[in-house]
Length: 392
Image (tube, rainbow, N blue to C red):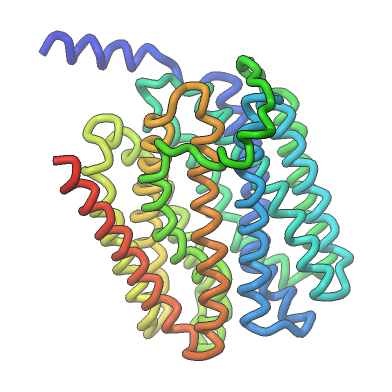
């Protein structure tokens, strides 16, 4: 009993909120704000250029898949070239690519620039997650990653709504120049972070081709993959789905989703630190399944907002727990690769989900997207139960 009290006292003494941690959270907020503003507006841009639902799915997918392909390199480079170089490079690429959206005249060029944006996103998000990990005391990693996730969730609370509002008031040129400016703010904040030095690892080009993920992080990352498939359907098609059904409140959906995420982050990380993923994963997954079924039905605006809250509570609980699990399983010198693996599976789920759901929308209709998404989450739950049985 005494040892437990001492352990809690030590954890309390280890500070999470340092100047550098606050800076990385702020930088993460602004880049995520810009990114979240693009989620509901890129489909509108595609439609304005004459694109179909299948094209929307492909453009969403090509972004996440290009991000995925670069993450293994980013993971290695974080250890060999340092955190700051990769982070700043990723932010710069993201800013330039989003700025180019302001002048894109054709869907073909949009595909190309979307791929470039995916590279910047893959570099910057792999780096920032690793930088945050460096700054958080190991004994409070679940709690710290929950707080770090709040910066992205706050952006989610305002980003989609702000993007949709500005899209109705401004031209696409003005909109994407504003988003690029947010990226510049993130870049400037990132220059002020005191990055922890890591021991450089020699570049081994022979093994780099084979070393594309961190094996110890595969279990939580695979579970995350089947969860984030559902997000591909929400980000790409929910605004179009609600318009088709004549249901208002899509801006409030994203707000409810984000607020639920914020609330769940305040306790999910601590719960993971105290009791592990067993206390979080299955309850959170059940909430996501309910949200998907409700979206498939979607009788009115009230159901839309409830679905947003359910999804926010579920995903907000699961994501930081799985990320802390992925990082804790990895050796200290492989945290960059652990984050690359985790975010890579995150990207893969969204990208494949968007591509598949683009075809589903064209063949069956939008409502079937969310039925299939619910099945994907159930697969993740079944895999998790299988892991628990094996470890007993």
